[in-house]
Image 1 (cartoon, rainbow, N blue to C red):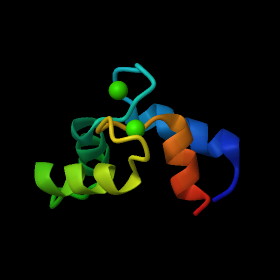
Image 2: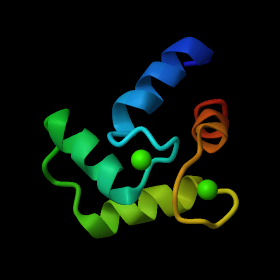
Image 3: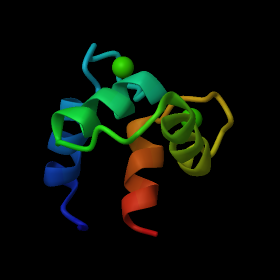
Image 4: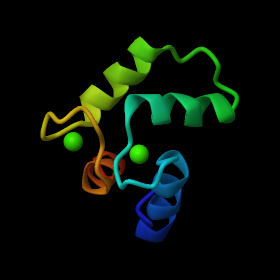
Length: 70
Ligand SMILES: [Ca+2]
Ligand SMILES: [Ca+2]
């Protein structure tokens, strides 16, 4: 996926509180809503950490976008 508008929609859907950052908790509930109930806090944190470029433990849209375009 390289459509920035689609990526923004997806990002906003995951960012439940709308603060512009995706936390592990938000990522986990987004996956749970998508039917993936096997994602634990630990897994969600590991996925966030693997995409987190500046080490603040949350994903900005830039980091999300960079991940999609990897
Ligand atoms: Ca958020
Ligand atoms: Ca970050």
